[in-house]
Length: 346
Ligand code: FES
Ligand SMILES: [Fe+2]
Image (cartoon, rainbow, N blue to C red; front, side):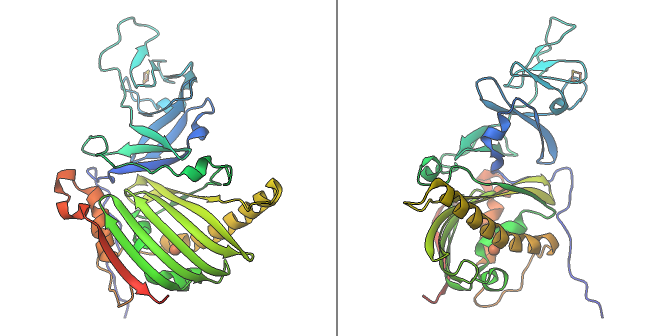
């Protein structure tokens, strides 16, 4: 008999709420090419660009005049010129010129989104309540990004995944997929939840990377995940930082960016280090895409049936749910540190 499981994506209603938090839009410099960038995110259309000084701005893309898509217009002297009737918008979203009229209507403006640049990446702040980030809700600066001892860019890959991002975030507490999916059985696994930060500490035995693997990672808010990793690779210890961040497109799809920074081996030439970084990045991509393959076809299960040895999926989902509720509704005790050790076979 065929069994029917409760397989349903998130309802895509008009009042669907996207997570509160910073979301990465890729390398900041990619916006400094003198072009307008169409951003299909948070169920809408935005436009990103940089002015002559290199300051980046992200605006709602639909022109308040008659609805044309500003991202299809032109960037002229740091202003966005609408393709329909050539109203021109400043980086702050205000219309400053209408070619056929001197008086600019006060409502001739489009929303400017809050953005920040950290670790050479551009982030956009989403908050359905409209407030700026609370104190401490920020993306941490990683000094390695500016260090000569590390590779200088993230080698970012961009993928679109057709599911709700919760399916990806579940991974942070999933202790038992490392063996079957990545060939890296777990030796130690713990999670720490504290405010907007969700940590994972992982020690494993990597067949692919050949030896011990120690990874300390954290989500800073709902969508930005950095992992500091130490692995044996080609008989050497390689230090790296993985970037795994996403931004929702619709309730059931998101853009995911995966990147890797690698620490250079002292005494090696730039060429040798570049070759190592590329090989290592490729290995990490292979590992990561094993997760992606699962996400592409898995379903959304509201109440997973867990067994002893599984990680704290329910606690993780509680933590993640804070980004979908009003800030005033977030239980005060979630600001406290909660540590859960799932496995310790060291
Ligand atoms: S719709 Fe943009 S100027 Fe008319
Ligand atoms: Fe994984």
